[in-house]
Each structure stands twice: as C-alpha cells, then as structure tokens.
Length: 88
Image (tube, rainbow, N blue to C red; front, top):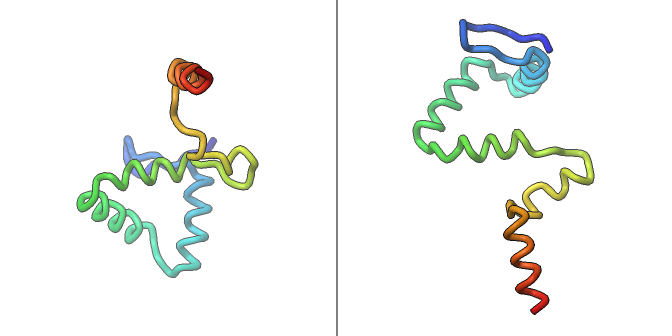
C-alpha cells in the first residue's frame, strides 16, 4: 500500500486519495474545501464521526454488504439467551 504523507502523522492511502480526487474533480471541489467542511461539520455535530465510520466500513456490491446493519450487534450469550426465551 503506498501512502501520501502530508505531515509527520498525517498519512493517507494513495489509492483512496486518487479515487476521492476524481469525485472532487467532477463536483468542481478541492481537498482543502473538503477537509475544511468536514472539520466544521464535526465541530458542530460530533456524532457525524460515528456515522462516517459506519458508512466507511459498510461493504457494498455484495450479498453480505446488503446485511450490514440489519443483523444486529448481539454477542453469542445474548443470542443464546434470546433463543432460549423464544422456545420456552
């Protein structure tokens, strides 16, 4: 994986930057505006970070991706308890 280093601890995946660059060019925007708007939005609504992380982790164009967010976040013990409650 090649990286793009802006500063010492400010590193991006080069392929990701290139793909975002294509989208920004189509919308006639630039990286500075994008990051500035992102930071402004986060300062006004910090919950956006979780939403953005969720969207970034979501798979697309696959059967499993369709199920993202639909199944739930139960652990094994909770599922087993719910199953036993339902059969009794």
